[in-house]
Length: 134
Image (cartoon, rainbow, N blue to C red):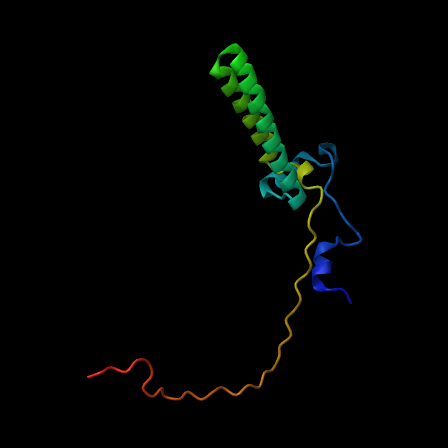
C-alpha cells in the first residue's frame, strides 16, 4: 500500500540502536565494531561537522594567539593539536557515531516472467552507410 521508497525512509517498528555508552559493550565488541568500521549516515554527518568546526575554531584561536605572541609555531601547534584530536575522535567508528544504524530491507526474489517476444529477423543491410562515389 505504501510506496517502496517509504519503507526505506522510515525505520522499522522494533528500532534497535547501538549501545550508547562504552560501558554497555565489552572490549571485544568494541574492538570488533572499530575494525568493522560501521558508522551510520547521521554519525558521518556529525563527525564531519565536528572536525570542520573544531579545526576552524582552532585555526582562529591559533592565529590570534600566534599573532599576539609573534610566533607562528604557536599557531601551528594549536592547529596540529586540534587536527590530531579530531582524527582520534572522528576517524575510528566509535559507538557514538553509530546510534542510528540503517536497517536494510531483505532483497525480494525476482519473479520470472515469461516473455514471448518475437525476435526481429535480421535483414541484410543493403547499402548501409555512405555510398562511395567513383
